[in-house]
Length: 582
Image 1 (cartoon, rainbow, N blue to C red):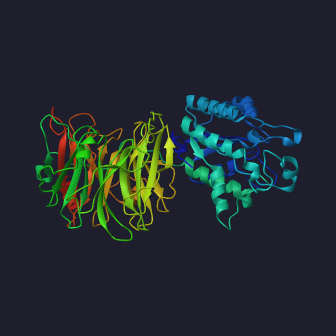
Image 2: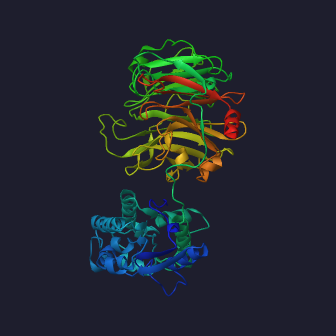
Image 3: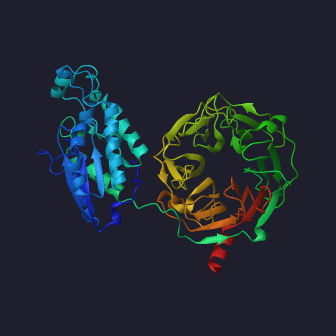
């Protein structure tokens, strides 16, 4: 289920909603109230003056719907239209000798796209619903119990329905409409041993009162989701000219220095950093601080292969799950992804070695230890670097890979999300305070939406659908730490659509619950003014034992000069004091 991508039903005093569908939408004698009636009641109970018109007709497919679209939908001048078809479109009347669906999948897509396009042109909000699955009864099996159907599978009637479900999902994404994935709701219900999806059907395929109630509740929640703010209302704190917080890490006249990451060692004061000599590529520079970021060493020796890096290097601490052996790993991406290892806290390093027959962009966005001691890493690609000879596709894909041996070897990456309407990338991870949930913040690179967030309750085995974050957290390369009081500090490049510090290096202060519930947070802080466009802030963030946050990044800090690396050191109590003083 995804949120609506247009305004919500809360934006007008009186609204008309049309429920446009087949027999799963239409009134039914064996059902006390269908979802359209229940939805109207729920919205009115929440204080909304709405009228829901039921435009469902039994036996209809999208060709029938196309013929009556103007009469039954547009002529009502609705603000919102809910569309659910697919069961009749996908049906193959084998009992009549038919060998093909009543409406081809291509025609089904074309019809849905026509509805969505016309409604969008009239600024009418649209929600597509996938059809629910059906199961075999004796009567249904007598009619449809042969190829292409599988009568031996309880859900064998859905062999074709599933393809039409995927079409609905695809059209919802490409048309930027809302989506209520009814098919998925039924699947999840059926996965629970005591909650069979057949309990939601009055016969083999039509929802009963319980089925309609579930759909109506989900629609009511979806339609009442608040619009996502492109800006923010929380206070801004500015550290740009407060030199007592700033330390220059590295600067070279005429040389671009960028994109650092940092690791804090277990002594609580030694910080290592790597960054490229160039914009996202170039020979790697390696430096160290032994006093918590107050001062930094000269550039340290590096293996020869580090000079061949073609991507942003990222460095991470990992520990062998069986031996407890501590090591550092450093990634260099594109194709193929390469990996260097240190087993003496960074005093010496291996050469960059190929990690597998795959690659990607900003490998790795993060490396995170799971409860079983294994590690999960995540990165993205746009088609160019995952495989040799790849080309830009316009589709962004998020990948996860796992290590069972303390970061030495990694599994072949699995795709967890792909999309072209939004370009989600550069993941940054946060674990919930109770340790039971993973949260990943994502850059949105098409610049049409806010940044997004996904959650996992099973240690990265599955993820929720991406959801937009508030404007206050919209930016690139989110990196987070918890302070001792439980608050989060997140550093990133500000890319909020409506922000006075857009393109600058900023931080966010709030709680995990703020992120979980879509709240703006406590306040924003501008760490440093970036003087050229939006080219800054791939931050490294660590927190010292005394609660000092040390965040390190690159940017065009001086007008007309190449970017260089600097650190900002502060405690949240410092920010609190500045905020209180106004």
